[in-house]
Structure formats: C-alpha cells, structure tokens
Amino acid sequence: MAKQKSNNMKKTLFLFAASLAIYSCGNKTAETATGTFYGTEFKVENAVAATELPALAKEGKATDVVVTGKINEACKKKGCWMTIDLGENEEMRVTFKDYGFFVPKDCDGKEATFKGTATFDTTSVADLQHYASDEGLSQEEIDKITEPEIALVFEATGVVIK
Image (cartoon, rainbow, N blue to C red; front, side, top):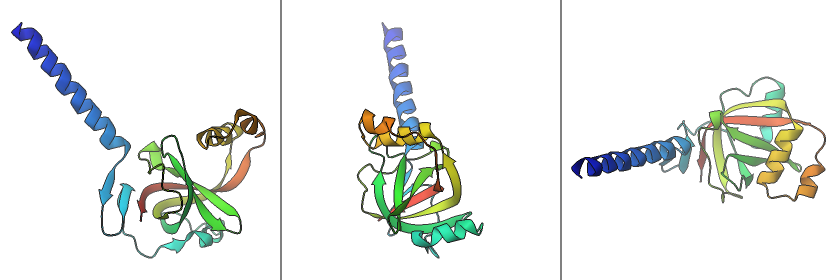
C-alpha cells in the first residue's frame, strides 16, 4: 500500500514538472515598464517603424533589427504568428523563431516592438492555406488559395507588446 502511494506521488510530481516545463518553454513572458515580453528580451531602443522595413530589407539591412508597428491580427488558434501594418494596405507576417513562444490571441490593434530578421520570401500554398484556417476562414475561401505569395516576412526572436 505504501509503495503504491509512493508511485502515485512520483507520477503526480512528474506530471506537474512536465506540465510546468512545457508551459514555460511554450510562452516565455516577462512584465516590464516597456510592456510584456514574449521570447527573448532585448533592448527596446533605436526601433525602426514597420513602414520603413521593406526598403531596409531590399537593401539587405534587415538582420537583427528592432521594429515597431501596429498588430493587425494575431493567430486565433495559438498566437503563433501576427501581422503588422506596413501602411498603404500592406502587411507583414511575423513568426516566432523555432516556434519558441506565442503572443496573446487577442492583441489585435496593439503596438508591438520586435527583434529579428526580415526577408522577402515565398510562402507556399500549403502555408497560406494553414494561415487562412488559423484566421477562421471558410473551407471555400481556403480552397481559393492556389498560388504561392512572395512577401516580406519577419522571424522574431522576441516581441514586446504594450
């Protein structure tokens, strides 16, 4: 009887520790005067406006850059991506390095500052359809996506949301 209780206690502690580890790896956050950090913290200074980023990326100057902009939308399933307003009816998708952290699903319209690398890249039809599904589009709308898209994309190592 005592051995069974000991085994149950070990199982409970293991499950608790595993749950804590999974949660802490999946969404690293820190509250600061600047806002709430997700991912790796960084110095929020000398940030460029998101509207300036396309020109910097074309010149090859968008590596390890700090950017600030308005969040148009975040993934409603997990918070595993967000789109940032670039002005002139353009936006950029921001993903998170190694799927290592997520942002709140309800952060649409908030200001974000993020650090990482911007590149022009081709997004496959499968990925575009996946993003459309995350947005909650109907299967009919998803099926209309038949061409890959070349666009400015950003991989962030850290994000702070105000």
